[in-house]
Length: 133
Image (tube, rainbow, N blue to C red; front, side, top):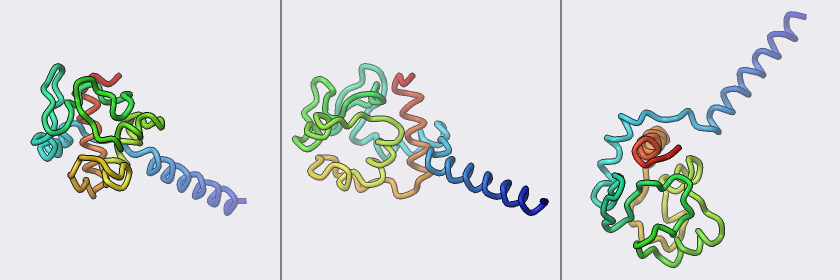
């Protein structure tokens, strides 16, 4: 009987850990602000901030890809938006890992953030600074 409970407890623990890994553990916005320094050459994040080489990221969470008014996106990014790509925690996580792999033809030349924790943190920062609900 004891081994059944031990087995069930172990299974529950593994499932909990797997779920946390899939969902992402969330990030630290303060650490993400430091990671965002890599993004600042091309992006601003403050409300009403200017577009640079890349679009201003205020309000990016929940926005359809390739749709920020006043910014000229690549045809590839516009097409991904038309195909239903909306920026959220999951899609940003994938994109920021290797932008050209997710959106071949993107004008974003940044190679990506290889460390998952850097992606978690910068997304937490973007969420905290960009008007995300």
